[in-house]
Length: 405
Image (cartoon, rainbow, N blue to C red):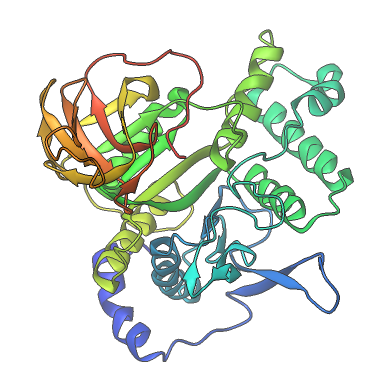
């Protein structure tokens, strides 16, 4: 039965609010991924919510909290789960959906002196959103002789072999094991969204430049003003690693039809402190509508909103504001402001300079564009990136660059 999403949500929302939903095992499955314990008597687990019949296509995977101190995505997926519960109970889920609302139990446990950190692993100092597996060589060796002239067959073959390779990989450490299994979930999916949040910012997307068309539909649905196109091979973030896997294989076998098997994107859900039911429920509804557009959920997604995207640009067009000195950042522009080249975006103030005039350093925009991100912490170091402007021209080398610190 086809239902308009607006009426659908209106029908079930009162039940969501008071918690009267019937959580039947037939419509929703909860799974746990146990991580290897790294100290005596300790263990952690990732909780997964699965909807639809296993193996149905298309498959969507959504995760939040890979950086443990970025909380808006946890609340967005909480609201999305409520929508999916209703859709599942109404038998409207045609594909398969996997949701990991707090995907990094290591990061969310990292309190130090009552402050939640959660971005870097305490054990090794590594960014949790880095160094995801690179299995292109191993998979290419296995699938090369088996590829056909049909893109669908090749995609299924590649996915099966990739999952087999990952299953044979060993990871003794907790965080490596976590990355390996999150990558497995992403590889099995036709679309994979990694929900993050910046310091103080507008919503924006990171996506491979060859996925621009799909990203612009997602961005229009979500009300995203900035879409950033590109990858960083050295960083190997979650979405980059998934995208590069498919495009690198296509380049390895140009004579065979290999289409991208996964639309992977990082969704930066505004600033880290913008945590509210109002924003999260709206974001969840837009994700739900996008899943309908992709045929994963049956229903009518409605007409796409008017796009508000001010910039859909390569990463190397972004002006990354660099602090010239240590001091306090005082902004004269805010996220959402349109700036001209040469505008003073911020001053960095050194309160220890004997001359207050000389102790104030103006930082100017190098481009015309949209200021979309600022640091949350206003004490900056020399050479630190503390704001970002989506610009109108190339500013950096056109090679791999990642804007997330």
